Image (cartoon, rainbow, N blue to C red; front, side, top):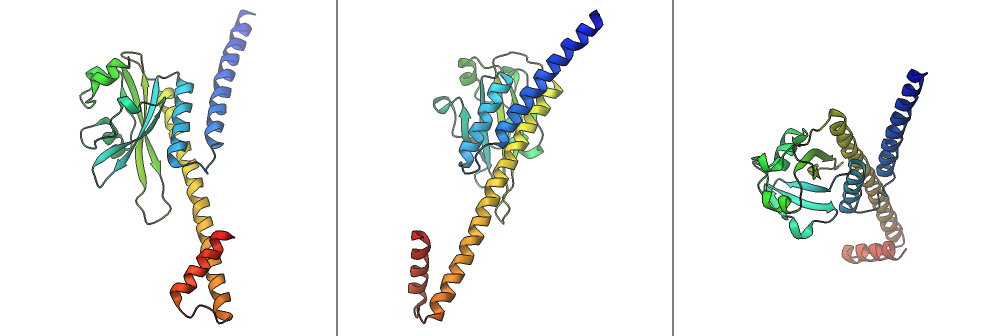
Length: 226
């Protein structure tokens, strides 16, 4: 009888955990792809904070030309306490992008790659989990890579493999949402191109548009007002 009660209790705990995980994953899938990339990433940061009971989640995106990691927002907002850009080399964010592997920091104050220790110490933050973000462009542009960093108050935190795996799963889901956003944009762009060509052919057939500049101006004007 005791064994049955114990098994039932374990099942209830497992069910509650899985149900909560599914709910949060669905929340990311349900993000409106019409939002800006910054807005989408902030929703994911909020989901991470709420799911793990973390203090803060922040996003940095790689800028290869400047060789820097650019701040892309956080939840809750850390605008006053956050550097706009940090170096790519010899930083945790840069290392995550370079290796495309998660980086665990049980104690920030003992981590050589974490430079600005004073600010996180003032916020009472002591540990961090950093996971890679990869956003495919579907074009000739360079794909976007970055890092999602989750901060905790706990000192000398032990990160479980499951915790890391869930954080990586959430990160991958945001890549899918951004991909959907870009697919919709490309479809819209193709429709617009088709509309432009159709209007040009119509105007040329009617003997309009002797000057190409005036032809394109009138076509764009019709598309904008339609």
